[in-house]
Length: 461
Image 1 (tube, rainbow, N blue to C red):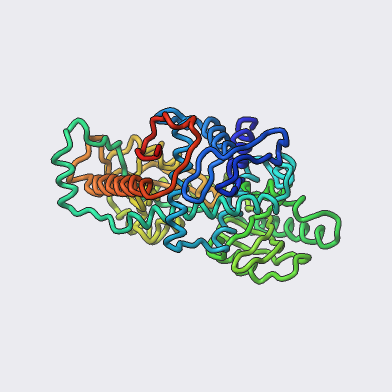
Image 2: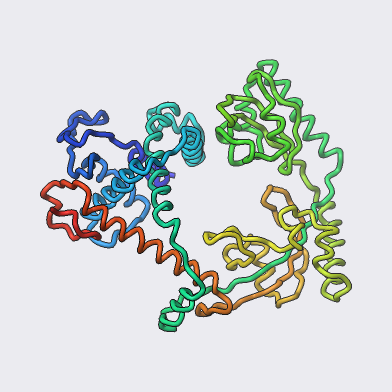
């Protein structure tokens, strides 16, 4: 925890950017009145302070970032390049809306709250209210988003053709081609054990009791959420979800939450894919809502799990004996909403987009254990797992395809090679733009940086 807090402290301080006029040469910091800050670089109309560089260094050290070169030179250069993007974004009239800034800042603060345990602990550690943190983070988030949008704009016209990919593959030495790890395609059927009505009623009675305790003033909603909510992501924050759009919530949950208008009242019991909830409104802001909730999940008995596993063992035997087609059984019996309409095929949201191919390390642990020893076309024995919605289910998987680790080739890895060529061309386009932008931008730096070995030429005039 100490290491996490240290990383958080450095990141938080670095995000509280010091906005200074370019002609300022020294400033006394608020945090330490005996420390004199100074402007060490000027890029266009923007200043880079010594404190900006030091905070970036501290954050990088905490996160284990390594630098290709002397960090005393590369860190201020990196900040200077960011100034170039911001200047161009202003010239091109790129904008980030207040709604987008608000959402990004809230997501960052909610992530920090989860790291330290509660909003109160966060405020105590930072010695700031959450409102003050939002104010400090506002401009930094805006600038970060503007930089990303400017980079995307610079490369939006960069394309690659199949001929470009073939040329890349032909010209690349075979031993330099990317190594593609083993990938698999997996189909899955899940069945949720029956939950007795008595267990559902037990959960509802508990939630009704919570509602009565809050409305009678005997305890607070947030206290009960910390003690009893089974949503591990929000329980530590007293059930608070932070400002969230309708599309980010379960439809049944959103329908009730967005109709709340009185923060003193508790919602009716809501059933979602995750279990049963009660909800308390905190605030509405534009098209977003901040609310608390308590989630409780009916428990599945071992006898019900055993009963479901018996049925799935028979099903596995019939599938391996080719009595039924796996895809037909998916549409009839599977409870997995994410794969039911895709013939049971699991999908992987990778950095290169949505794909059906998984590296073994990217599969859910229980699925990977079963797939590892299957041959293509074989169906596993049934097993239990906790699905993405936190529910215990019984499952079987079929190995649809396996591609062993190999050097990239045009037949099996065309899309991966195409992405690689595209990314390289985008990087080259951005680098060329930075080189030209430096030439046309006013740059002044402290003499201590005059002899640096920079990544880009042209900084020193």
